[in-house]
Each structure stands twice: as structure tokens, then as C-alpha cells.
Image 1 (cartoon, rainbow, N blue to C red):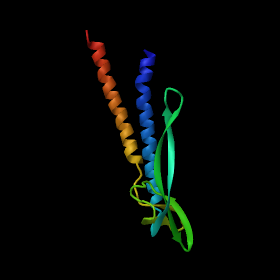
Image 2 (cartoon, rainbow, N blue to C red):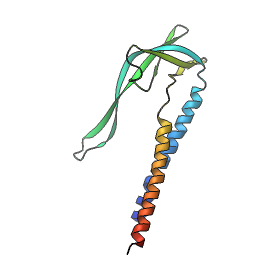
Image 3 (cartoon, rainbow, N blue to C red):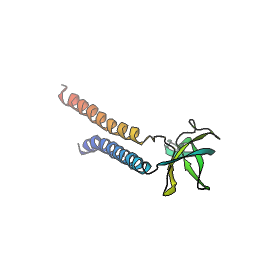
Length: 146
């Protein structure tokens, strides 16, 4: 019974914590981006191919998800800076885009693209709620079926 309760509450709590962390991180990034009031034009100088490890197959080998991130170069007062974007599909190599930077700290910049943090956070919390509803209904059905 304890294992069932632990299983029942572990995943919703985990999903809720992940969701809250993603939402808080998103809004902290938005707050930091509000300081970036000046605008310049940046050019994509390279596409960074990166990967993340997501898990393991049954034989112990890991699987990875690969993605491409544009790296922009922009100039402020004759000095070059770089900032990463989110999507290489939106910004292919040698394309240009507006870069917003902090006039007091030009290395603090962003491309104006919205990160996926808010969507991930809301989806994670919604998953926790749906998980609780599904297993709540299933437990009621199992206890009251003859």
C-alpha cells in the first residue's frame, strides 16, 4: 500500500517541481531581458551542434537528442560580442537578426526569441494534474468494482 501511495504521489510532485522551476526560470530570464533596452544587428557566424543525453537503452548505451543553435556576433562601441539564439531553423548561417543588449553591460544580450520554458512548465504542471485525475479515477473504479 505504501509503495502504491509513493508511486501515486511521486510523479505528480516531480512534474510539479519541474514545472515550477521552468516557469520561475522563464520569468527570471524575462526580467533580465527587460534590462536589454538597446538594439543592434547581429549576424549568425556559426551553428553550434549540441546534444543532450536523455536516457539509456536496455543494453546500457545512452541515446542523445541533437539540436542546432545559432551563435550571433554583434558589435557595441567597436567591440565584438556573441550570444546564442534558440533556433537554427529561424536563423540560418550568415543571416542577421536584431540583438537587444544592456547598455551598461553589452555582453548581456538576447535575440528577442521566446524560450520554451513557459510552455514546458505549464505542460509539466498540467501533466501532474492529469496524472492525479487519471489515477484517482482508476483507484475509485478498482475499489468499487465487485
